[in-house]
Image (cartoon, rainbow, N blue to C red; front, side, top):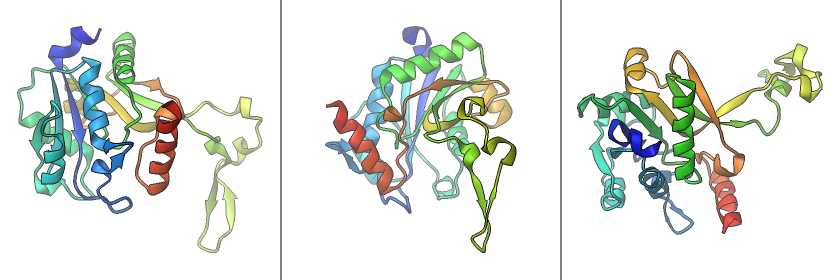
Length: 230
């Protein structure tokens, strides 16, 4: 399957230089090498892509990935702030290339535990379901239906009171996107201006490969999982 899509798919890895909660997170040393290299290497190893593209405005990030086998997209500074949307980054990448590719896959640099097999299998799910998009997802460690709204005074109120006290097996099945893999048909993305298509299917990943690193706590958890595998 991977070989059949290779000539019609590109991977896009957004990697701006700024990060407030975990400074320079995209190139932090994670188990012996800069974090972003895990995403570049898994994308290449998957065999799914004609081109693996890192979009960055940061010279240090560009230097780190320069010899990794990817292409560097010089991201415009106006879409490199902490308010920039990933959809704008993808549009910028697409506009710099021809639109002959049928598929794109956005891979976040902060998900180093994702494997080449995850990329392959999620693409196969996209094709099997004939959907517009396929996102990697994970189950909640605790049902979100236990959530409470918190007021400014500290008072709490059940957000979903009708669901809160149901036995777990009767609560609706819900998942969350895990910040790892976002496949989309290019025509769907351009039509909707969004990675979320009219019909979006899912690829379920275990927590042990689903840590999206945004804080020091996330980093420590991901390292724990990575060290457990070795």
